Image (tube, rainbow, N blue to C red):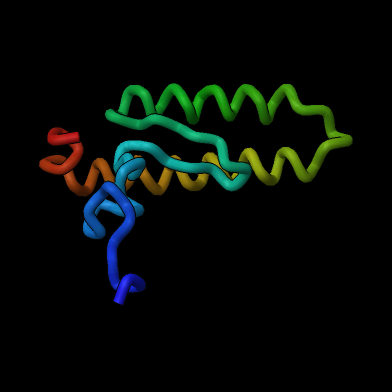
Length: 90
């Protein structure tokens, strides 16, 4: 019956949810974009646009990855705009 003992010090209901941050968008390359509000989100988008413009043409894969991150952030921006009561709580 020892196989049924929970040897972990944390409750089962808490496992896997400790580092969940609903205000952070994770990009395709694993880049973390903290987006607690629209201002922070717009700053990330602006920085990515500048990175895209500064990337040499010999790195098209990097440009595609950066655009994919911009798309994720734009999706998040739209979500925040459509759910103002949720974005105010975050």
